Image (cartoon, rainbow, N blue to C red):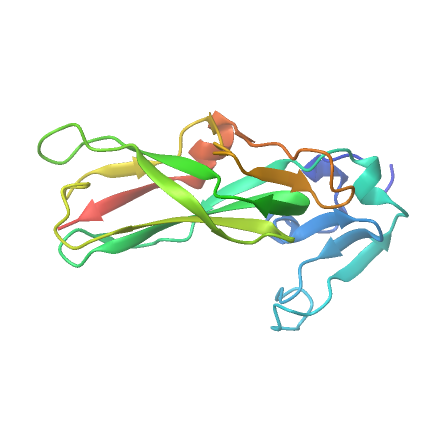
Length: 195
């Protein structure tokens, strides 16, 4: 069995990596690489060049279009009384380039008092040219968009391109996947709004 593969599955990433390590590893045309600034490299400079773990020529082209590998909350506290910014990171297995303002929806389960809140539409904020796209939405203090006790989650969906694009940077023409599966949404967990 090879120590790595040439597919877009996490299982193809170098076998010696932990699941947590694999989050920061992606395919480029040099092979499997670690994101700049990763603790794995000992370099905390996020602008550093990616570190090659194993050379596989034209790997980014070989694995096909970029796919979403993980969705995670950046926001850890959502306090209704103080206001907060909802932020979600979408990680790809290759570099992607974004144009326009794609959006991602966050579901509000309305567990707090009342009903009819959400979904919340987060707009693309940063990450073009990387593997990590950030989507955000500012919610002002005491805003009616959420109530204490509401549980926010990321459901299965397609990221809405809203006239923009998310493309595989390796060839510049292939559209990257915009589908967030229910498994990815569930793995991201939930965020509970506090008073």
